[in-house]
Image 1: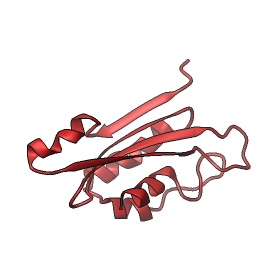
Image 2 (image 1 turned 135 degrees about the horizontal axis):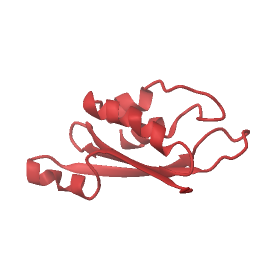
Image 3 (image 1 turned 45 degrees about the vertical axis):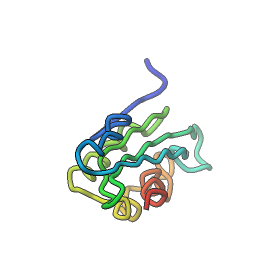
Length: 116
């Protein structure tokens, strides 16, 4: 079994970087955080790249990699992309919290705040 999971939804980097060819500019932010709370065993790194339109801050894509949590979180990003959510909206979205599986501020909230 693989020890690291990769997941992606929407535009991906570097493909998403070619948004200028389509009349808009694209940026990406890469975030590293933990998969769940510090006081639960088995905590590991989770990495996320958020791809968004520079002017409108509309989310165009996301990539995640980690030992835990990368795959189930990408489902939330797929919904955000489909709904045309912005980085500000992602920063304040309410994601389920359970200490063995997530943090109070999920990596997706953190990414939205960094990209605002």
